[in-house]
Each structure stands twice: as C-alpha cells, then as structure tokens.
Image (tube, rainbow over all chains, first blue to last red; front, side, top):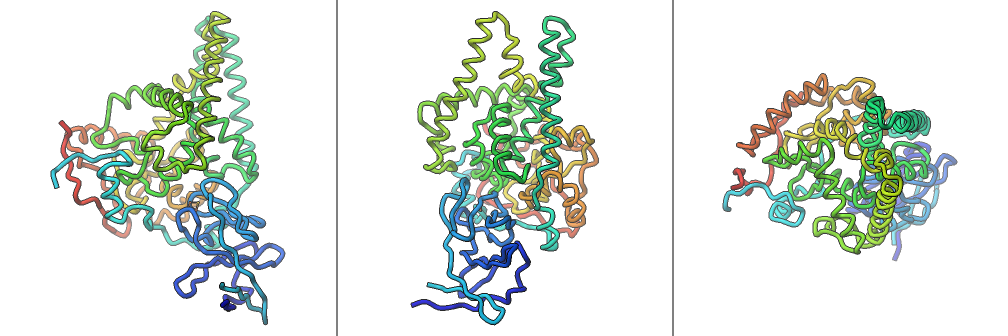
Length: 104
Length: 359
Ligand code: FES
C-alpha cells in the first residue's frame, strides 16, 4: 500500500537547495535543483543520522553538513567515505504548484 | 564506583560511560544563524585554495632548492627552516581542510591535496580521515574522540618530544608496519569501517616503500640531503603544527556538548593564518565544519556575539594553556571554564569518573 504525501509548495524550496520535511515520525529531504527539478530522499544521513537538508546542494549532490558525506539525491547513491550506505529516494509528482512524494 | 583517572582508550570504561551518558553522536549546541547566510558561507570556491596552494608549493620549491644548493654551509639553515615549516607544519592545515572537502570546489583537487599533505605530515590518509570524522562527531568526549591531544593528566614529556614530531612519528612508523601486515589496532577498529581497511593496508605499504626508497637514496649518495628534503622535514619542521594544534582544545572542558566550551578561537597574524589556513577560528570550524577556511573570518563575525571572547593572540592562549597543563599534572580534574555571553553553564558528564593522579 502506498500513499502520496503533500510535502510543500514548490516555492518553499529555494533554487539549488533542500528543506527538511517531517511526516509521521519520519524525516525527509526535499530538493530543488537549479533547473527546477524536484526530488525527495530520506532526510537523515546514512552515516550518523544528521539532517541532510542543512547541507549544501551542488548540482545533483547533497553534501552532509557534518562530515561532508555526499549523495546523488536523484538516485540516492552514496559517493564515498564517510558515507557507505545509499540514501532511499521517493517518487515525486507535482500537482497544482505543490510537491508530492510517494511513501511505500 | 572506584575513583579513577579517565580512560582515554576507545574501547575502555569511559567509552561505555560516554555511551550511557548520551554523549555519543549527540546533539551539539549550535549558534542560531540565518539559514541563507550559513548556506552562503558554505559555498565552495577553487580560487582561494588554488592561490594559496601555488604560493605554498612555490615556497616549498624555492626553499627546498635553496637548502639543497647551500647544503654543507650554514646558509642552508634558514632555507631548511622555511622548507621544514611549510612541509612539516603547514601540511597539517592542508591535510585538514582538504579532508573536510572544503579547500577547493573541485573534488579531485581536494583529494590530490589530501593525499599529498597526508604524506608530508606523515599521517595515513584513510585512518586519519576516519579518526577526524570521529573527532567531529564526539569532540573531546573521553573514550570516543581519538584526537584528544592533551589527556588529563597531560604527558608533558611526550608533548616536548612532539615539538619535533618524535612521539607521533614513532607511533606512525609502528602503525605503518602493523597496517602493512593487514592489521588495525583495537582503537582503530572502532572507527575504520570494514570496507575501508584494505585501502589502509595498501597505503601503509606505499608509505613504507617511499620512505625506504629515501633511505636507499641516502645510502647510495652517502648523504642525508635526500632525507632532509623528503621524510625528515615532517620532524624538524613539525614544531609549528604543535604550536597551532595545542591551542585548539588543550586545557578546556571534556564531555561537554558545546564547542564554545571545548574549543578556542584565537586571533592570529596573517602569516600564521596562511600557514594554518584559518583554523585559529576553531569554535567556528567545529560548529559549522562545512564552512571553507576562507569564509571562517566572516563566520566568526556572524556568531561571535554568542561565543566566549576570542583570545587576542596565540601568546595569550599559551598564557592560559601552559599553567593549566602544569596544574593538571597534580590536579587532573582542573580545566578552564570558558565564560559564555549568555551565562550558560557547561554540561559535565561521565559522573562516574572521578579524577585522581594515576599512581
Ligand atoms: S553524518 Fe553525514 S557524513 Fe557523517
């Protein structure tokens, strides 16, 4: 069973930035690229569970603010030490100027 | 609990106490700073580090060439002094900044500088990447942080020997042989993940091969000049690394979840700041480790209202550090309590650990 979650208005996220979204006890990171593509991943770093959205978005990379672990947020791929475990990603949709993502 | 001195190993009693007391990978105090502002300060740029690296490498080349040219005369001394400090001390801050991935915007430049400067400072890059990661997670948490430079009571003899990196180099040489044989120490095994270990072993073998190569060239040429250029500068030029490094945390609180209480921000002159790449803004660095060295002075301005008074100079910092360390020889429970602007209290933990001079 999967649910579509209404996460935020598109303008809530600055260009090339990310915000944290909390839902039902879970942390999610919502991303907007420079060319207005939107992505959603788990919100906590797989290294030491630090909120990723406080880190820097560079292109398709989110860099964790704690130890500079990097993930490709479009695929969730961990890009090397100190992050060794990939990030979970979620399917997104845009409806009426809002960002939705699918929880499974 | 029986009164005892602190146990600084990562697999001992205080490691368990840190866990029990919620000090492991805990939430740390962070000065409230506008989100856009901190993101702006975190932005990467290649140019400041390219400029500084070219100057650094240029000076290394000129001073090294001068030392070699005047070898056998007293004129080589000032050249090797400069070369040694650039090689054996400045490499510390280059290692550090590139390890955080903040020196350059371009990833491969960070990696290149990281491996190069790791060799100069004689640190194994993989081990130290992970040990420094832990240092940032659990800064000066006893039993967790592998980079506590001055445990209580401090080992003054080792500190003096380390002015010329003697103890640290000896430890590195022993570690290189251990790692080259495919083993880690129990402490290292707590912070180096399985997937990274083969890299540790191969790099140790490479370091040994390079250092042995230098020894062989010295034997073949009948001169220690090659070692004066590669290898020995990590020792004879290491004194500024310890001079800068001890200002970071020595004598301050342990087991507090607030970098304002366990780290020092010290104003330094432009030459020191070039050599040390602005790591004198150490509270700022620990609180926001992804802010590059060139933005730390701006970060300092942004958060200083909520931090203790910075030390006006490194001499001023040492006026506090030296008496504190000497007092800790007899009174290991003593530490410097920094005064916070809002009067917040330090949060001491590990209540089971009572300080006594170990006999
Ligand atoms: S917590 Fe994210 S890299 Fe360590």
